[in-house]
Image (cartoon, rainbow, N blue to C red):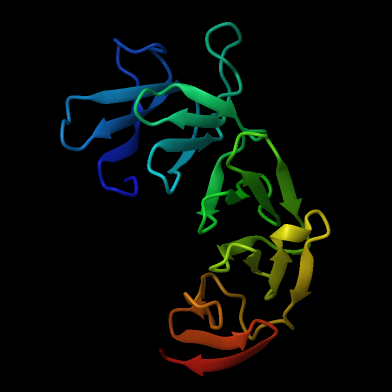
Length: 219
């Protein structure tokens, strides 16, 4: 669902009236007028997310298509009202997780094909993409600081890494000592002064500094 609740996007099998009879599609429905549906024809598995402005849909990982039937690289950004492609993205792998920066200028994703790194895209259409590498096991979560200047990555290797978005490509700022248990969820407070990570259901790790994590049980 987009930010103002006016549209919902969902995956759907293409029916006989659509462009690719044997393919798949993303459909965008106007909630107030359910009969008004925009169809983006795709083939294979896709991941998609609304931009915070609610007017653009970011799509990646469309799988394989038959040459000559539809554009093979369908990863890109689409107008949510018309389905028109606005610009392409340099990635055709499905996203397992995606996060926008608070100002909507950056999109951070974890790809199914590159689970040990995070990829950062500009949302302005210049196709800039930066891959943040450094974890030895898959990433479990990514999050931005409230000012959007830093990106935090949390991996199954038990480390949280802090990346300075403004210092790309030399972006790594710091990393924690290994946490007690690898976290699968991370959150940053609205003032950027507190961090919370959850290694499992009965543990919550709290910190005022991601380099020094105090553990609290059974929150």
